[in-house]
Length: 66
Image (cartoon, rainbow, N blue to C red):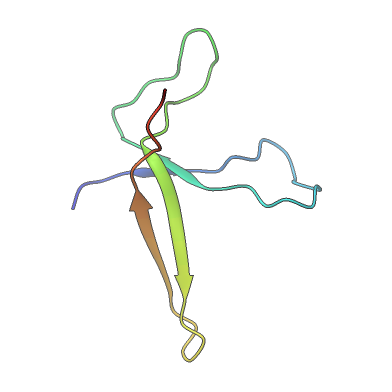
């Protein structure tokens, strides 16, 4: 296991109907000079146990860029 930082995609309160997808980045990543954003290392998937309420988070690889 290695450390990551989970990135919240909302800069402000999300009032739209579509939920935002969480992503993660590596701790040593730096903001882009041009966009001011961090690069994404992948998406965060979440699963909930209906019986006990435990939430498990898993990281997935980012989609391949064309």
